[in-house]
Length: 139
Image (cartoon, rainbow, N blue to C red; front, side, top):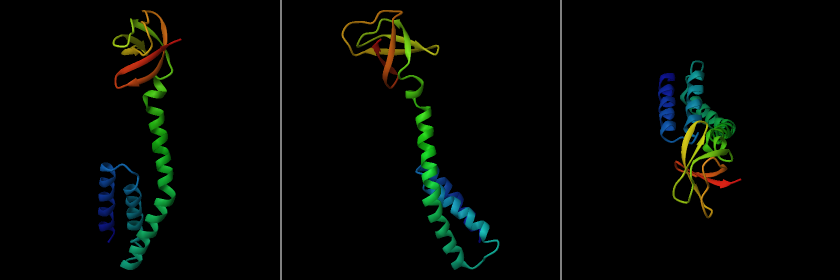
């Protein structure tokens, strides 16, 4: 019986890989916990009830914690924390259609939504990004 539950747990892990919603991961944990319990209990009705109870507990308790960790990690690794709001030097005059800046030793294409042009060696602040283009504002 425990082998079947381990296989079900692995299948739930594979489903979680393809649909990262932190739902099937909890079911996989429930399957593995129930597999551990089948060492002591072999009656199918008790095993099924135990799997349902473990699934409900993991979904109610563990899923919110995992979702919070997932969103926290996404927020810490985005472009917003590393580049947006940073003051940088202009290395090529910036207009609405062309220009470049340097930040952390990297060269980025830049655009300026305002009127006119920002000259070389001017310090600007990165306001937002669209794909690989940084939009800046004068300081």
